[in-house]
Image (cartoon, rainbow, N blue to C red):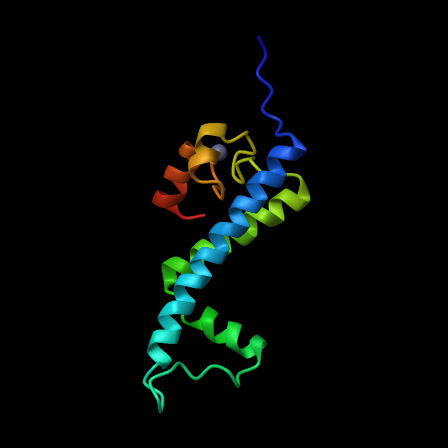
Length: 123
Ligand SMILES: [Zn+2]
């Protein structure tokens, strides 16, 4: 029996929603930390009301830890690969990344073998 790894469009829509959810969670986490760091304002209330939403989200992004930032980058890259139609393919050997791995880490860029190599020798 032949196994078809090609992901259905519906699956992708679902995975994309999941990825965007993960991204929102990372940002929300950082946002809470940022609000907490700003809460030393005059009345103890985070004073973020007068910042434009654009500079506010810039500030939030600046406050991301390195881990959070790379997570957001991974997620953005995964969504971009969906748009390009190469989602789920290893960026190194261009083989399908096993569906199980994609389920656990939907933003995986490499198959397990390549990931190991990349960690050892760099991208
Ligand atoms: Zn690979």
